[in-house]
Every structure is written in C-alpha cells, then in structure tokens.
Amino acid sequence: MRRQFVDALVDLAADDERVLLLTGDLGFNALEPFSERYPERFVNVGVAEQNMLGLAVGLAEAGFVPFCYSIATFASMRPYEFIRNGAVLHELPVRIVGMGGGLDYGHNGVTHYAVEDLALMRAQPDLTVLAPADGDQTRAAVAATAHLDRPAYVRLEREGTGVRGLDGRFSLGRAELVGNGSDVAIVAIGSVAHEAVEAAERLAADGIEATVAVVSSFNPSPADDVADLLARVPAAVTVEAHYVDGGLGSFVAEIVAERGLDCRVVRCGVTGMPRGRSGSRAHLLGLYGLTAEQLATTAVDALAIVG
Image (cartoon, rainbow, N blue to C red; front, side, top):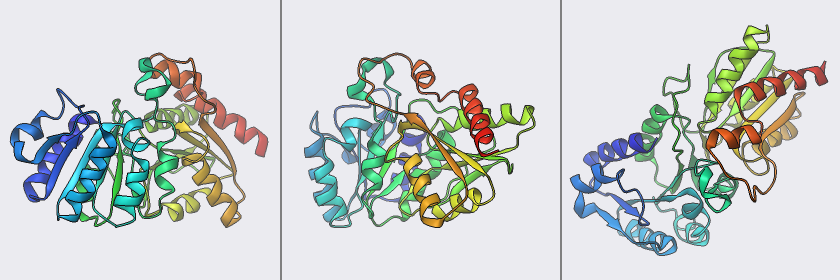
C-alpha cells in the first residue's frame, strides 16, 4: 500500500500546491517519488512525532494541507494529545498517516504492533479514519482526502494483497460489499479483508453463502450500510488485525445493540496484549484466528449456535 499511497499523494500534490509531506525520519526507499518531485514541500522532522504534529497544526493554520508519516504506533499514540487538542479541536486539515497497521511489523515485537490505533482514532468524532484494504483502495482513499476540510487518520498496511471483488471501490462512510449471501456476514477492515473474502469462498464451496462487508472508513460512519446487512443475516463475524475491543468488532456490536438487531456477532482479532509474541504477519494472523481457514470455521460455528 505504501507505493500506492505515495503515487496518490504525488497526484494530489500536483493538483493542490498546499499539500506537504512530513516524516518522522521514516519512509526511505518509499517517499522519494514525492521528495524528489517536491523537495520544497517535504520535511524530515526527525524522530519527533509530537513535534511533527505540532508543526503540522501550525502549517494547517497557515493554509497548508500537511501529511504526517510515521509507523502507525508512533503516528497514533505518541502525539495523540497533539492530534486531539490541535488538529481535531481546531478542525484543521492535518493528515496523520500510520504505516504498518495491525501486525505488519511482526518481527519487531509488540512495541510496533498497531492494535489499538483504530479505537483511539474513531473515538474522536471529528477525525475521519481511513483504513484501506488494498492498494487500489489506498489510491481512492488518498484521493478522497482532497474533499475533506477536517483532519484524517490514514491507516496503511505493508501487505496490500488485492481483495477479489472489491475492485478498488471506496466511498467515505460506506461499507463496500463483496458477494450477496444471506447465510452469514463477514465484516472486515484493512488488508485482512483478503482473508475474509477467501473465507467466504471456502464457505460457498460447502454450500454456505456469505456477504463480505469491507469497512474502510469511520467518521462519517458506515453504520447504515452495516445495519442493513446485519438485518438480513443470523450471524456475523468481524475480522480485524486490531484488538477486538474498541475497533471494528466493537463498532459492529454497538450497531446490533443500538438498533436491536437479531444477529449474533463473533469478533475475531487480537484478544490480549501480544507480549512475547513475534514472527511473520502470516504467523501472527494464525495465532489470532485470522486466516481464511480459521475464519470459515468460526463462521460455521457461529451458525451452529444460532441454529
């Protein structure tokens, strides 16, 4: 997704001279297409994420549209107060770009796992959260920021396997559907949506028809789209490379509770502090039940409970 993000940002900058790119001493061998084309609009602030956000707030107040790039844990948590009291409070078009969402930095250990960033960011009602599922959606999501006059958090992942059937569709505040099954819903966010679609294909081979809903943004909320889907299925499985509390799973459970829907929800994601756990992304997805095979089994078990 990183390459598609940078390409989309270059295009955005070509149309809007206010667009700037700030980095916290990261993105080497990735950000050069922007820095070489627009050197006067590129700033490496060093390992100082709070300062980067403070600088971005000032630049936004001066009329610029700054994109702040860092690893997702550092981009979301280290400067969180600056995001809240600066960009959000003053409704400024600051873009916080978190690279390596979820378990992408698997070999770096828990300090680099972004498994609470969505919970933090969607809690700010005036902060748009973008979490594309693949490279094509990344391009569309970055392009969509051109029309935002408020701050945004862009959650990118290093693994950008194309999601079959999604075809790059992206709209702010909407859930994009893949398939039209009425037996079970699989609601996914981020690149693990690839596993969700594969799980649906496995279920179809066994005669179980699923609809996959890819949620790629919060604030504006895709609640209506998700509620419409959950109203016509007996069970739903949520899928996220994130803690099950506070992110997509909580969002879906809130919809079911608030709208009184008769749909059982099973949340799949990280269920506890992953201390002492490291390895490849694929290894970690397996540890938390997020592979296609595991998700298909979870969906079957959920349907067995509801009868």
